[in-house]
Amino acid sequence: MLGWFSALLAGALGALVLAAQDGPKGDAAQIDELVLANHILTMNGVLDAYGHVSVRSARNPNHYFLAKHLPAGVVTRADIIEYDLDSKPVSGDPSVGYTERYIHGEIYRARPDVMAVVHCHPAELVAFSVSGVPLRPLIHTAGFLSDPVPVFEIRKAAGMTDMLIRNPELGRALAQTLADKPAALLRGHGAVVVGDSLHVVTGRSYFMVVNARVQQQAMQMSGGNVNYLQREEALKSGTQDGFERAWTLWKQQAAAK
Image (tube, rainbow, N blue to C red; front, side):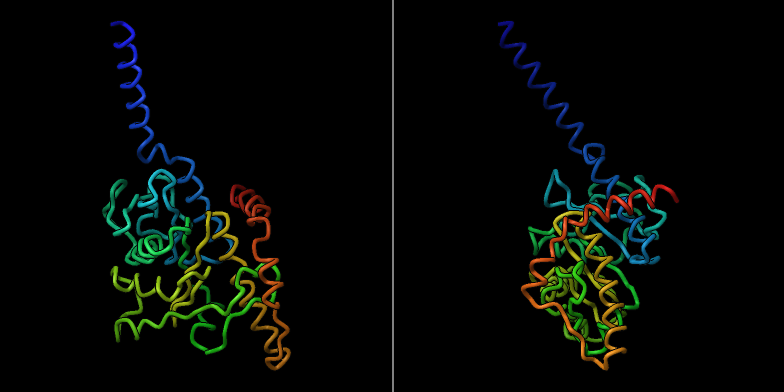
């Protein structure tokens, strides 16, 4: 009898522990890294006052974490909201979410392999979204761009808009343009970048901007005759070290600010 009661008590205590972990506090490490990614991407000029970065919940793959409607550089742990894939808040302060949170929810829905998403607006990337010139890899740290980066044309999806991804339908259309690629440009707007971790998506976002800047410079110098990475080179160099060395540096730099 006592053994049965002990087993029942142990089971109840175990359930309480799991319940305690099954919430924002149980995701503390992910949330801390998400806050850090916000600061790193801002520090490196990838995110401006309107960009954002999210991470899929390791506890529940049908949920993701994203800050509330704030500039990325000022985000704190208290500002993180947990969303479902319909981009409806399930925990955290739901008062003001990013208008374009549907970018994140619909990409996570379409791409089970994606664990983190960045939406950004660097001028270097916007230039490629409107020029008809494909963004292609020419530096080894951007080898993940092994194919020309696709461009999302919002007019084809919704006619005349304010260019923002304001609803699930536009989020799905963007996810379709992204397909299985690591990044896509949004015409006249910016880019989305995806990865299998926050470290990877942060590294990809940074080096995608660097590649765009170098490509523009090389095209100006050469009249457009640029020696890009061959596809085999890009595939061999694209993974790098998961950008762990860069993350280590950026983490130290962000802490020093």
